[in-house]
Image 1 (tube, rainbow, N blue to C red):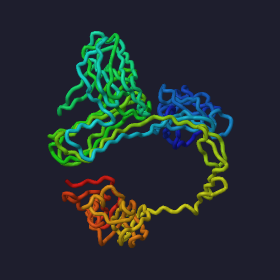
Image 2 (image 1 turned 180 degrees about the vertical axis):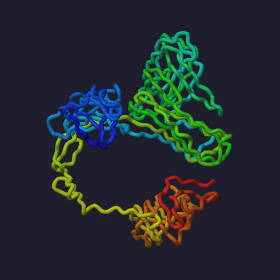
Image 3 (image 1 turned 135 degrees about the horizontal axis):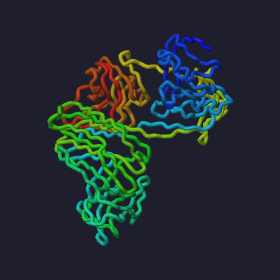
Image 4 (image 1 turned 60 degrees about the vertical axis):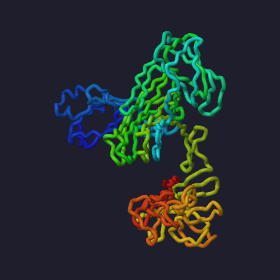
Length: 557
């Protein structure tokens, strides 16, 4: 029997991991067989070529509610899968199951049951950030750790020990030459527990060694050392101060020793680094810059040090402006239980201070498995984690119809007790008005609305800020007075938010707002020696600014 259907859109779920819509030609004939057994390949072969192009072949028999998958032969053949998709509450083994996400936005067809136990893997974003307000002369920045040479061209053999000194780091050995490489070396010294800080004097750490190392380190165009090591050897413990290296069977004729530290992401094992982002401002065209992101790979006691990504800016290409270096896109796995990363940053010339607002970020993800046990509960019971089991509590309920949250017999929140949150556009604020977070403080003088004030240490009362005096500008809490009051009166003050004053304020649009004279904020940055600069926020227009005071202040030299 042939039946003619008008098919506009067919939803196919194709395993694994893809859901798509497949259009079929309107008025296409589909041969379902004489008793609903499906379309066979032979039936398709007997059809016209035009029909075969439009049809997808199914099995001779089908399992009710089974998800459909391709068998990969022709791209037109589908068959049953072992997974069922049903809304029934009984009967099928996977009844009530729902697809889960794998953490990347893709569908993982393994199921988390509506009741029972299940788990899924998610990728949590992580970020490492460093900020340098202004570079210092003769300074090389080792960030999130670093590697520093302790001793070079040392020899080690039975009876010929090495004595050296480190900070609080692991110790790295790069073997350049050896007459007998295989054996064991022993490091003896004060070890430090990296988590607790507990020190163990005369502690030992044995390292099994086998081969000489590979040292491909070089100096870049600006003379900076780029470290590239393979088959080097690293201690499993962190040592402090003086230590001794001894052996009974190794004969190293040339070994370099380094202290090394690196970021291990709280010892989490499943870390993937994906990006490297750096921004800064240059104040001179002679500036140049090199930055290296390193991975410290560790397998047992064997360590490798490689660059993941590097940024460079030559003096010939530098301009006085803001820079954002190309975003490094990569995928590098880190086992934080033993491995890690660090950065070397070279801001040149090292005798000058040409870099400002230097920010460097490392992006990545941490893979975590999330699992839960789900049990049935009342529709109104709030679900929570109870000893790794998701369950409800009759004493903790939420009634959606009434928007009422109840703990025990007390209704703590309902629709009538939740205040509305109002959003105010900066341009709509009236003169001598504000929009933001406030508090009540005590006036120490006759205040005016819009004054920028500070909390005096002597009596805990508000006084006017002034850029000429550090005590009224620097290490203090600053606010904006929102009421007129006399000495001793409680007045409302702005902690953070928008403020407008048409008579006192005279800002440059978009500029940084600074502490000025006698409590009046200004966008004119002082250049007078002895004055103090502290940013208060930024100007929206001539009369309105967003008050968000910085915690950093600078004295003008």
